[in-house]
Amino acid sequence: MTTTAVRAAPVRPAGPVAPRVRHAVGRVLAALARSVAVFVPVFLVATFVTFALRSLSGLSPARIQLGEEATPEAVQRVEAEWGLDRPFLVQYGDWFGGVLHGELGTSWSNGADISTLIGLGLGVSLSVATFALVIGVLVGFALGTVAALRRTTWIDRAVTGFVTLISVMPAFVVGIVLVTVFATGLGLFPSAGYAPPEQGIGPWLTHITLPAVALSFDVVADVARQLRGGLVAAYRENYVTGAVVRGLSPRRIFLAHVLRNGMGPALATLGLKFPALVGASVVTEWIFGLQGFGRFANDSAQAGDVPAVQGVLVVSIVLVVLFNLIVNLVLARVTPAARRGV
Image 1 (cartoon, rainbow, N blue to C red):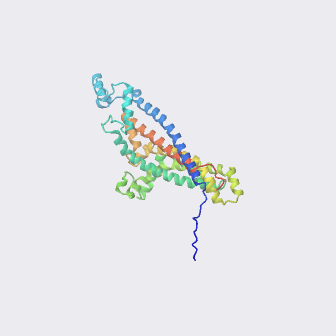
Image 2 (tube, helix red, strand yellow):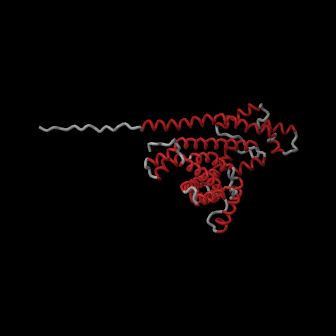
Image 3 (cartoon, rainbow, N blue to C red):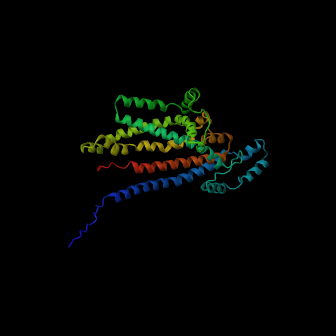
């Protein structure tokens, strides 16, 4: 007579994984809710002020199309064609409704769709700004980490002096030097122009590398300074002392405690850096012959094209808010309070 042994399936103890996941999701959702709660009133106020600029400016499409010598009757006729004879709040309501649908109006200068014009320039500027941000984050994090790990040594002082030097160098000066050395002198990169990604990743990268490097210096300096300060401050916290007492390795202490709790200031710095790179690169775009977002904004302002300027401001507001939202979500995820059980 044989006996068949029935083995019970091993029971795995329920660990704290689910509560941790719920806590992490809750933290991210809370950060998202706070950001959205700030975004809605800021966006409403900013768009209202942006639209009110037309009335405050006193500019009119009739002055652009007919010249300063236009008769009052001709001015009224053109303004009626553009709907500018209606009450201000009615105009704002129509314009804001269009903004919510991605329609930013029509250019006073050439009658073209502003959303299309901004989209063309924004693609160029986003390419350069994204690459500049990547360079700035990688180099800045490397320099800030090295300075923090070798604090009070000659390496720390050398890194601090280097980032101080590059922080005061204007982007247009750096751009001219880069063109002179690497484009005109060595012929390694094109001196001007832009190639979209559809033409190949290689040509696209070669055209955006020099302007991205020129714009990245300020990002490198700010990220390195903020990260170095945050890491040095984190090393002084009690949870680091406790980790040393428990015998954790320096690498584990740095990765699990110091880095995750000290990188907050550096990440927060990026919240305004990326939109600034997109919108404040007018001179750099001129140097490298790029028809980007910043150059479009500058040309529109000089031409008195108020709808185009309003569209630029709206897009800038959206970029600032969205990128800060992303940064807040990243901060909520990667910089938790010190985990003493690690």
